[in-house]
Length: 272
Image 1 (cartoon, rainbow, N blue to C red):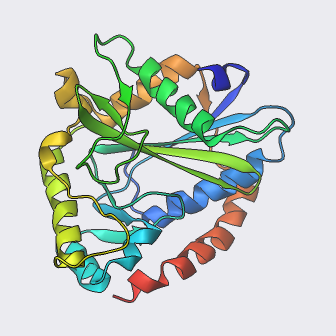
Image 2 (cartoon, one colour; image 1 turned 90 degrees about the vertical axis):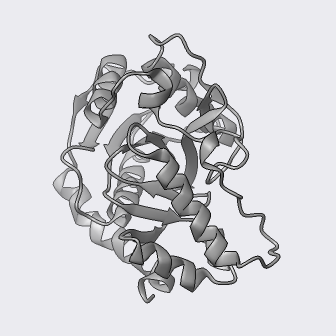
């Protein structure tokens, strides 16, 4: 964890349990607030935030270009999911009670941190958290997964996590979702149907994934052990030796500003 070893003290915000009833926009706004806060720190500073949201589909900016995006969003809503658009890279992913999300937020020192450095730091962190299992966690694109990318995390060729990154407000926010437990095949089928409805067989300039559920799985299944989100939280704390420090009053006061910006970005799907 070369990028992480220079940080002597970590701050942790735990919003993974109990499950948040807020829109996932709240989490994106919170990361923006914390990015703003950490950018003011001197030297290399690190912050970790664990979070979870029930039954939410997070779509990417490029998903808007689907020919039948409106109908595809309506399908997701009728399936019982909230739909929000993120401001980091990537395409559609599923969040629910079995999906653990972790944000790694770093202030950017004078010597620039490359995009790959950010991804490698998150990959190293997750690998260390599960180092006691006799498996190799690989970072490579898993074709036919949803939101495929070069830093998909997989075990034996099956994806269980995806990473995105955002650089704004003077900091770097690397976000990962880990499918910890639950029905991953059902999640994949839902995104498969979203793209099928959104495209209706038409050619598109953007190459959207043809999702196949057999290339994705959960950590519980891949490690052959029942895992909860609290189990993952505990592994994080054991590794990083940090304590929970919740949002300050000043940070809470900044949330409405960032929430309003995100709501404006999301207006295109809120109206559906």
